[in-house]
Amino acid sequence: MLICSTCHNTIPQNDRFCSYCGTTLALNNGGGSSTTQPKSGGALITVAMLLSVVVVVLGGVVIYLISQGNKSDSIDNNIYSFPTHTTTAAAVAAKIVATTESNLSIATTVAATTASAKTASATTAVASPTETPSPRIVDRSVTQRGWLLLTYTQGNGLPGIKKVNLSNRTEEIAIPAGANVSQGFWIPGQNNFVYVTEADKGINVINGSSSSRIATGLNPNVSSDGRMVYIGDDGELYLLDMRGRSSKLTQDRLGKLGPTFSPDGSKIAYSSYTNGLWQIWILNLNGGSQYQVTRLSDNARFPVWSPDGQKLAFNTTSRSDVYTPKDIYVTDLSGNVYNIVSGGQNGRPFWVEDYIFFNSDRDKTSGESDIYAVHPDGSGRDRITSSSNDFDYYYPVWRNDLP
Image (cartoon, rainbow, N blue to C red; front, side, top):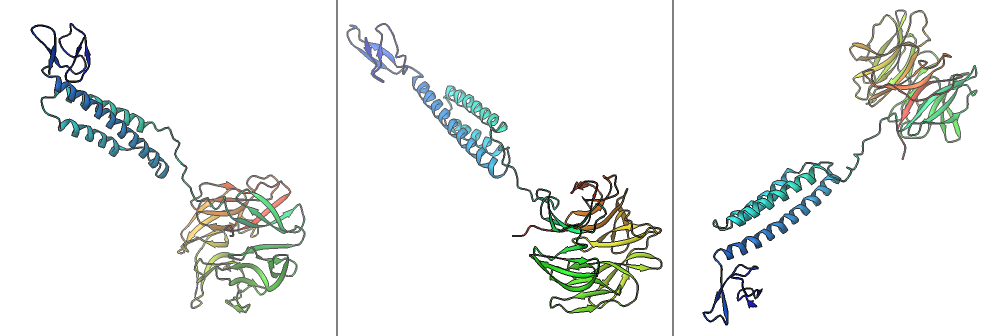
């Protein structure tokens, strides 16, 4: 047996070069001892092998870094395309090969082949992630959060007031049916509301388990700063300020219905009986000017403002039956009108964000109503309540969840 003088590997007696490092053996003429000389090209093979190992190890590191980046990006951004990482891996491999001596062709081949395989592996791994992306949090629609206040009756009984929790569509009685109360309206930012006692047109505010009378009239509407507009018992518009002082806003002796504050509180939209029909008017609180918005062949009643204060929604009734609601319309402040809900009896709209709530009998055979919501363009109709046929739900008013 011989010993390689380069790597000290044991070499069989009859071999002429070291199978491990490639060194050529040089035998003495007498054959008793031996020396080794490097085989031509052996150093190149050694360098190539070492370089191949480096490339493989480096490729593994790159793959690991890419996989970590994939995890991070999939959680933070829900993005599954990482061309930057793949390009970096190829660039690193190319740089290693480029710095190798030009005569190391075997090393170049090994490095290029390994880098190509590793890059392809990395690309495949990125294109097919194993982790499920985290769902994005989307703000809930107004039909799925907050509370509705609505008037309801059962059978031929007198009305009461209910609350509907929109997050789970459950209902609770605020004032039982038979109490003869209606027209509930939330006080903004509170769990309290105002309502009307039908028998004496008393406007009351409920605070917990107690209530107190604050005015006489109908159709109360409360602004974001706590003022209340309503129809007095003489049919005119009145304003109740935050100190409880009432002032008369109109005195034209024309009938009025459904006053409502604009979002900024500077205007009031309402229905006025004009030339034999109810039409939509606007009162400017800064100066007291009034102007007519709609001029329809049907009655236009109970207007509500859009959140940006640029449009109004309202319901119509026919000339021959002023009390039975008909369709829901939207108009801009110049009187350009379009229909969004028709078919059946649809009334008392209430506009919140990108939905308009309203009551309708469209899915009942008994003539009673449930509460629905629809987008301002007439799409996306959603049935909010599904009461039995002997219940009648109407006059929806929304508020957001309270802290």
